Image (cartoon, rainbow, N blue to C red; front, side, top):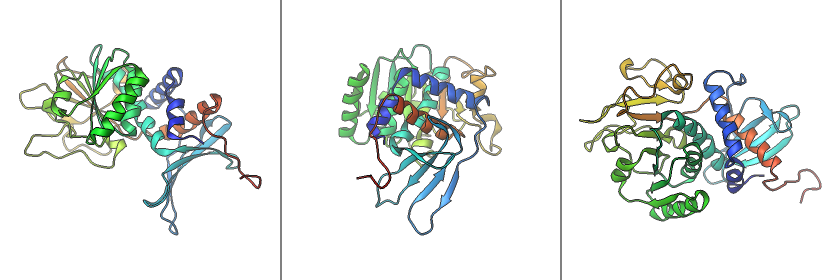
Length: 322
């Protein structure tokens, strides 16, 4: 059984993270295993939701992940890894921590292709579990980073994250209450949910915005307000500022209303068929999303790595269980 701390220990490993970057890259380029879709299972007699993932390779052969989302008044969501042959339970994982790493690793791969040269300052918007895993992944993906400014709605939580991140990474990490100044001074801005909305006119020329809110929360991107347009809008150009290049983890579903501003799939850049910027002053807005097959691979790889490193708590099942 893996707690959130166990998941962090398993994923925050240089060699392991590089292997996961390769997994995501293979999926983007269509060179990974042909994995089926996730299947929701209705449980009408309960308040729980089940999602059954496709079969993938695991620590003991073919396996699949099942996500259990209990009702609001019950225990926290979890992911169970089961052996494909007979359904034997291989492991239990805290779903919140796993979700954070599952979202962050594709963002880390994207950062390597989309960040400006030698970025040094990261503006991190959010202070929950998704922000923690995003920071650790970007610290590994962008070794030139030296400083992080954290902006969160909860100042105490933001301070706790900054203190823990400084100890874990050795970077200079501090909190900021000025969202606009933080975004303007950062080479890379990452938004993970639970933070003030970042606006396009705040960003410096050539900056990268990593937007994980689509995978960290269920909220849609913000609509324009009297205070100015939100970065989340597709094809947006800041007033009297550099152009914004939209890049998405996966191609958008269905035809875009305005094909001139249709997001560029990250796979086109990874494959060398497109450049992230038309000019050095372009702001790149990367939008995270769900990548088919990645959830199953992340769960199986994380549990397998934890098993090899002897991370986690053994759980006995059967008549002899306490």
